[in-house]
Picture: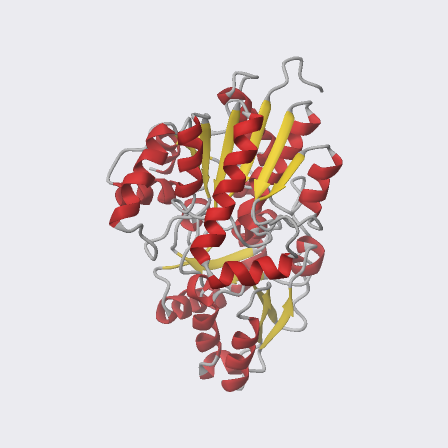
Length: 406
């Protein structure tokens, strides 16, 4: 239904990679708001026009700004220029953002961060122009802390934001610790998922042994695939009828494949990136194994539970907030090889119960996420600009999530 009171809302992402899971929420919410008749602008470095979410925005007549585009300079040459001078490339992005917003003056900007403070320079532009903004924070980790000179700017970014939307209670709590301040207007929101809401998938056959899927960007520093390869190299896992498929993409893919070859592993394969998550992954796999070191709330954990599969992951960020150890999955106490091996061992011992655990996971996750997170977030955005009301289930204050977890 078209809005009788259309607003101009800009979505700005500081993610310099082409696309990733952290982009899905703002991308889908922007499309939802455009469909409702609001005027939508999008600004992002390295805007991937071939990405389905961006194509949908283009088809909806949204204004798209590639912040890494330099007029008359081929994209590849700009990439070389940016690599040679990181500061110059980032400065150009900030200039492009300033110009785009100075002339368009949106009613509200949603600034999407892949982490919890990586957008502070972009926020500086918004603060200087006096444009109201809200933050999406997709990840917070003990691995990354802002330096002291950044913190004053980061704190100002949060203090002046109309709202700060985290994907887990952990992320909110850790961000407050890193900033040394209470963050006002904080809420927990959920990301869109690529599995069906109506029902979990049928349980796969076990005739060819247990099949585990490790799904995530090939970036071992955060995703921990290196630890999983070492665990799979242990004699007991070599002997068992268990296979791990590594799904994903990234510029560490060859390194991980060669590590597997170095260990002589024939119990792992690398199918690569799969867009059809239900049919391409969960129709053939029994469980997720996610040895992650840094997260917000892994989208793949939500999708695994939605599909009625077993989750085996580390107690990092928000995973244990939605997945209960021993009931709807198995949580490793820490992102270490020993802890991952211990959780996998408990899962292996309970493998006869996996179908029941998967069914319990499917029922549980549907009480913790809305059927359409993008639509729920679109309602929140309209609440901020006074263009609509937000249903009670669309978002909950962080304090409410904490109380529910007690």
